[in-house]
Image 1 (cartoon, helix red, strand yellow):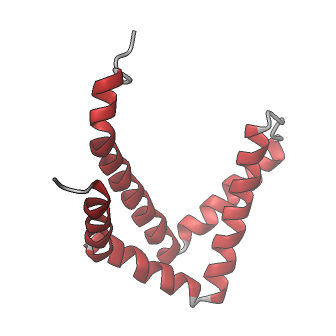
Image 2 (cartoon, helix red, strand yellow):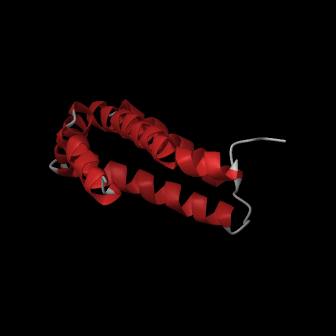
Length: 117
């Protein structure tokens, strides 16, 4: 009998050794070692978090805040390394989402979660 925890740890190791993860880690280090890039990214993430929190609390987000966030986004998008990092994060997130879907499939079959009306 296989142990799901062993398999999960094995999967984590595989993920760590994957090309996607290596690329992501390298870009992450590159941004962290560049003071300006790090500050830009930190600011962007802070703004993002604040807006998300407001949304979750049902607070109104002003047009000004939206424009400010949009400007921040354009700024980080123009930064070569940061935009690459964000692209890789997106790819990694997609991969983890797909893996999660595969892992939870037996439960969805059992409970019929994915059957829409």
